[in-house]
Image 1 (cartoon, rainbow, N blue to C red):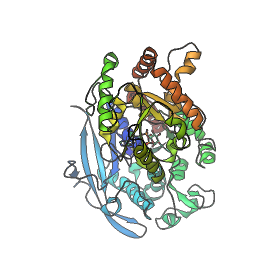
Image 2: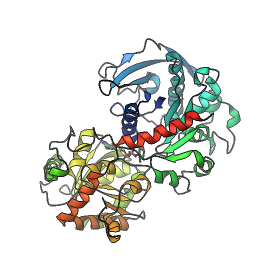
Image 3: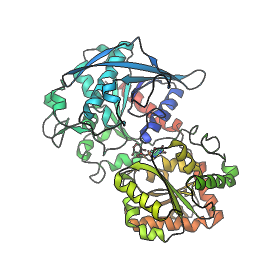
Image 4: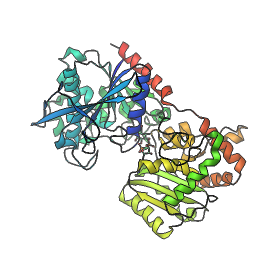
Length: 490
Ligand code: ADP
Ligand code: GLC
């Protein structure tokens, strides 16, 4: 099975959030079950061909692409990513400095749509020069949403692609890539699809996401629950009606974890390794973590970790409204994240006013993210919506008990301890609240704090989480089954 995995993030080369982890973990697992995977990623300026050992592709050479009536010379770099002695994955980096030499992966620049249109077109050109016909183009999120229509309108003459199918994974439906309609008319995309309510149109704009939904052969989201949720107005981001029409081709597959990266017994970023059998060593990481954040080195006060993009999706408004109650709790916080000014300012003010209780780092720091997973007692994700969420799944493996809102993938992975206890089962692995309300969040935190003081129960909850298996091998198999189904479709 030949899979072209098209992504705008890939750990460790380019990461904003979970898509980067997925691109790495899923492709690796697919390759292990025998898929021939090639990954396609823009070469952002943060990726240095020399330092990152990329090789210029002389076999592909210069590609001339016209975008909005301007011509650009695009080049390609390749890297062979060795998985073990017999398998490797080729990563293709699409190089157009004009488009990708920017301060961040995603921008608010005027040509944001054109940046990813160029990336999308380049993929077909590269496949042509490699004479490589993917069975499935596995495309991810809005930046890749135009690929099916580009193939249909601009490359369908090439029989190389005659059996290729598209699987579109939606990691977050709120990011839609809606741009000025000029993009359609200036780029030979057929205007017949752009009319009010039409396949490319969304509130007067051309929508990459909608195009992906309409023209892909199959659609997936990153948890089963989110696949149901996005069919509703509350979670569908306005796309629910169009998604309803594609309901039979919509599937939810939960993201997995790359346990070679996220595992407390081997994690290269944490000072003290531990496992279910040596859980007592976890508290040594807690001390390291407290030191890192200049907090008192006290292992008895519960410590809540947060690692997140600081955006409204993640539910931090609940912390803002509930802050006076939170300040009454006997608990410390360590927070790592960056994003919207309002949330950064809120956490800064807490850090300033209560330096003994709120440790803060604004920025992106993978090393610290691992230390927080290992050193915190609890991990808080009060998300307003959460397509899958990875940190709560990492937390389970680290014996760091997740406190989450019951939404999207959080609901599929975290089982409330007290709820299951009432059913006579000691199988819960965390604490869950349902309503998007700060009161409910605080009740869940309080329930967790109570159990923290009951060491025996706490350990039981930790072990329940550590025993769970969310390995990519399981989810990759499900993608493989969908690819197989697709490749049989005519
Ligand atoms: P999302 O993709 O919505 O941001 P996920 O939970 O799926 O949420 O994935 C977030 C990923 O990004 C995790 O690997 C998390 O550790 C990482 N991450 C988020 N913010 C930071 C940060 N400031 N520093 C380091 N890693 C971060
Ligand atoms: C998105 C979602 C997150 C998901 C990630 C990877 O960024 O917000 O919930 O885990 O994609 O699929």
